[in-house]
Image (tube, rainbow, N blue to C red; front, side, top):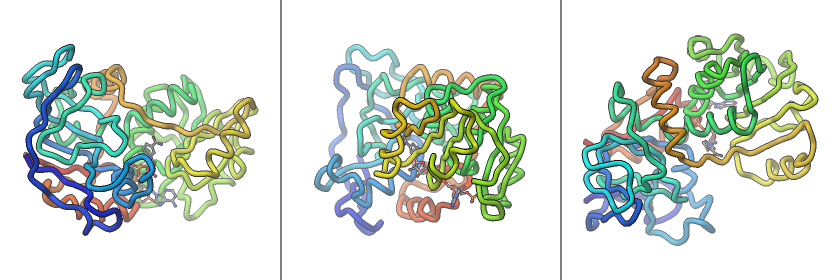
Length: 311
Ligand SMILES: NC(=O)c1ccc[n+]([C@@H]2O[C@H](COP(=O)([O-])OP(=O)(O)OC[C@H]3O[C@@H](n4cnc5c(N)ncnc54)[C@H](OP(=O)(O)O)[C@@H]3O)[C@@H](O)[C@H]2O)c1
């Protein structure tokens, strides 16, 4: 089978499509014929070597989001040969950029039947990030007032729909050109962050989900209610410091760290099937154009998700 390898950390020139032996599933694993791959900013960070302490020396594989068909199942797997599945590979650097992927059964579920493989591959990492930030960390519920900053990208477009499903009253920020998209996905109010500093938005909020990750509790904390939560997506020193400083405070900063879970994927699939959730696809490219997909994601202007079509 063919897979994409990082042969040198850095630019897209360090990526190569190589032929390798077909992998085989072990206990609790599935062999998936990959039909579509979701591309995420994390793929670019892995490619650049941002996490090389964890990802080790190249060559390594990359990619997390997969939609495809199970062609072999190891002992103990619950999904079966022939199932159309989707999920996110929890392995740190990932191994989704391939014609075949061995995945943990626990990280995958049946994909929403009404979706194409391309649409399904757009969901797992981004939508589970939004779900785990809003439902698990922030405990958003009916009537919660939520600010979603950076609402038009991969995670943001799911965060809007999930916050709407949880019953929140939503203020969204994005560029002006994406105002209508944000309103159509559930925002009640929209702020163009270029025209108005997010720190001057009218609060108070129970939750600020800083999807883009360029704000802080220090900057936006005055917009929160006394027991409000500020959630960032970027694992950097400044965020760790704010999290540590507010670990035992009511008004707190937290970092979301997404994990793929079968139950969450099943929940998201059920939301899709009853019309409460839809992936927004910015671009679908053939597998061979993985370098272009990275260049597009790096513009930080993607509206929704970029997907690679493998077959
Ligand atoms: N910790 C975790 O588990 C986890 C999981 C998933 C993602 N993440 C991180 O979360 C971040 C967002 O991921 P994503 O998939 O949503 O990225 P993305 O799809 O690449 O985000 C693109 C969006 O960013 C917006 N944007 C660009 N500049 C901005 C600015 N200065 N202020 C606010 N928004 C801006 C753009 O909106 P406009 O064009 O409308 O301006 C665009 O729609 C990434 O850094 C990613 O690595 C972390």
